[in-house]
Length: 198
Ligand code: HEM
Image 1 (cartoon, helix red, strand yellow):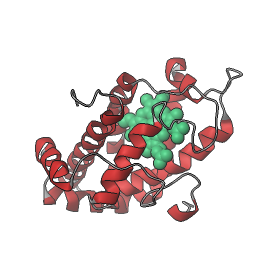
Image 2 (cartoon, protein in one colour):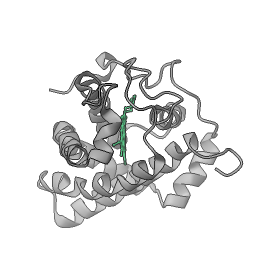
Image 3 (tube, protein in one colour):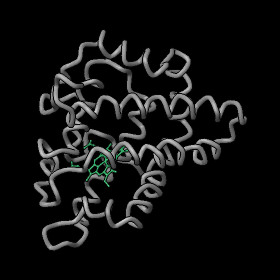
Image 4 (cartoon, protein in one colour):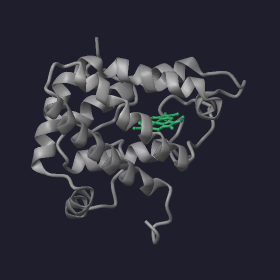
C-alpha cells in the first residue's frame, strides 16, 4: 500500500523547505508548448494515473532492477563503505513512487514548478543526501539522468497496457507520459547548467 504523501519523509512538495524555481508560470507555459504539451495530454495523464497508481511501486522496482544491474549507475546509491546504502535507497524509493503518481495527477502550477527545481537539486551537490543525511556520492551526473529517460519513458508502456485500455488509448497515455518526463528533465537540468547557458 502506498503511503499518503504527507507521511513520506523528505517529501517536501508544496512546503517552504522546497527550492523556488527561477521560472515564472509564463516561462513554464513556453516550455510546455516547446514539448508539445496540450490539455489533451493533461487528460490522458489523469487516465494514466488511474492505471499506474497501484503499479507505481512495481514500476520503480523495475527501474531499480535496471540500475542494480549497472554498477556505474548503482554506485550513486553507495555509502562510504562502497556498499549499497539500503536505508537511503528505501527512503528515496518512497518519494520516487510518489513521483509517478504526482506526474499523472499534479497540476502544473507554482508548487509543481518549484518541486521540479527541488528534484533537480536533489541529484546534485546542492541537495543530494540532504533529506537522509546520507554519505553517498554527492551528484548523479546529468548525462545519466538524461539517458535514464530511456527506461523511464519506454518502460512505462507495459504497465499502461495492463489497465485494459485499447491500444490507441495506451498510445495516447504513453505520449502524454513521455512529454511530461521530457519536460521535467528539461526543468531538472537547471541545477546543472550555467545560468547564462540554460
Ligand atoms: C529519467 C530519469 C530519472 C528520474 C525520473 C528520476 C526521478 C527521481 C525522483 C522523483 C527522485 C526523488 C525526488 C524527491 O526527493 O522527492 C529521485 C531521487 C534520486 N535519484 Fe533520480 N531520477 C532519474 C534518474 C536517476 C539516475 C540515472 C540515478 C542514478 C543511477 C538517480 C539517482 C537518484 C538518487 C541517488 C536520488 C536521491 C537523491 C537524494 O539524496 O535525495 N536518478 N530521482
